[in-house]
Image (cartoon, rainbow, N blue to C red):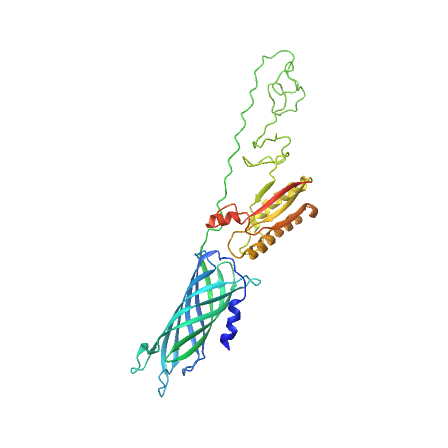
Length: 382
């Protein structure tokens, strides 16, 4: 009956996103329920598990070591004997999508069981044999590195011409460490080449003076009412530079710090920008480090009512296409909702998720995947 209950638990769920740490170690304590035909009482179990998450795969390798001192009577002797039971198993672990804050998991693998009886007449390795195991469990996090891990592991062995099975119910403290590189290093944009200072031709002072105090005498000043402190050319007229070199003069440029080489519209603004929004792992929760940047973008949209924005979410290629599509839509909606909270009218905002489509970097590397996990804002002139 126990085996029948475990089978559907192993096949339910969808692919989970990868953990943010390379290693996990879990000290364990639990209880073993013997279900076979060996004369043995139930007994306590101690041990540990080590899981490696560095492979780019949804199945993670795990080494499990369990120890018990059981009251075994393997040889039908008049009285039972204390028996050291060691079990070592190599499993593949598969984590599912989170249910709220809980991460369900399933695993399966092969192992070897060694028993050492206290009776001198018994041979230690007569009861030793291989076994197969399957299990289900869950991680309940305290923070992003420490979680309570609960498991039920079913072990089946064929020994002495019979099938014997055990069910171990385990609990332990799961500790994750060895953080992976998740974010691409910030790109340093080249500083705009400073415009050379205008050359003001020194003109000998004459009696006509310089009424607007711009350094150009009235006799040659073609703009005699220039406001004080404004940069002027040799004719006394205001100089209108293009500081960010986007082809739109400063006077008309409402996006004066466009990166060099970026295509812009007639107002000097790029049609599409990447918003560097940080989210919690496997979540659409925006991290506080992104609040100031989103406030600035909201201020821009509020000030220039002639523009609307379409917020587009993307993910890397890990996980299923359907899951990534859903996650990218949630993250785009989260950015849109925050812009609404900051005062941008709802009729000027839209959002969509495109999942793992349109990668801008190589998904085969952690750096490339970090670049592909992005939010883009498409600026639309009304």
